[in-house]
Length: 409
Image 1 (cartoon, rainbow, N blue to C red):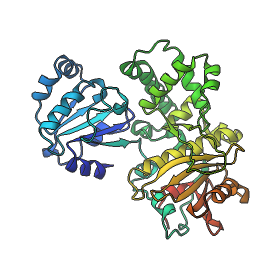
Image 2 (cartoon, rainbow, N blue to C red; image 1 turned 60 degrees about the vertical axis):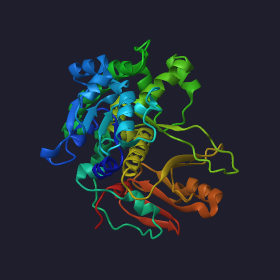
Image 3 (tube, rainbow, N blue to C red; image 1 turned 120 degrees about the vertical axis):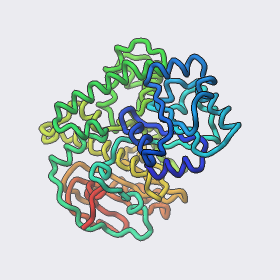
Image 4 (cartoon, rainbow, N blue to C red; image 1 turned 90 degrees about the vertical axis):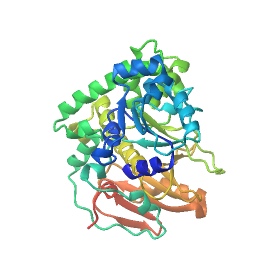
């Protein structure tokens, strides 16, 4: 996302980089330019700075030389009003680079403070291409008018593929060589989110409910959101439950894929699907490991689907093709895991399978989608854990999941 941030800084007085804690925001913003031309960097994780800015936000801002980087801006949302005043007086591009480990735009006083004055960029944990040292363009490829089956990819051992899922994309987790070491990090990470960051955002009552809620949500990853059912499972009232889930989304721990409609005449499910923003954390929460993958197909399917959704959301940040992501499901349970809708309304449907081989039945949902969309249906893709790219029809293709990041031979 480096080039996107640099372009935004050249055009907008305020750039806000949001994303999960430990996803790499601080490292990224501190290495945007030459070492001798770095802007002033101030983090509100420093209690002295936090106290100073809280005591008198205007005096604090007046004492700071621009351009400046404010890290963890969600810890002092009052400062945003004063940044707005500063920008209204001087709209010089690149004056403020802000980062937030919570979605600052969801904070009441921040929602309107910087409208029209700020570019917002979302940073996800590392993609598989970033881990491998290359830039992926899978969305551009499958949405292209000139789509052709990709060349052969290097074979990847199935156990190694699932290890990618168990590891996720957080830089610290990626660097750890043992699953036990990663699990210790995931435990500390989720504890910090639940005990500190959620309390920073809101006054939480009954915090003892949160670990249990997180476990219940993890078990439902990839499923339709049903607040009444989750409320019964957790004994948390729906009002409180919706508040907790909104906070978990605000902290980028969970995410949602909205339902696709496009004014189709067929009755469709309207509920969004729930996903975790990192499969490393999801794997830790549900106790997934390679041995379980050999016997529990449902667990494998859940993890693989969540993994693909995450990788597509990451790549959407830099691929040239602008897409909006949805899921498709009829009231008869005919479904397609992922819809990529382009600005003109054309659609690429993507179905995800955890098996190493597939048959024509894997395209059942995609064919239903095609029947409903007509000319708007561009093509259907089934991503699976096998090795061969092949066509099942003129507009129906099977691709290995590793095509999403692998170099083509």
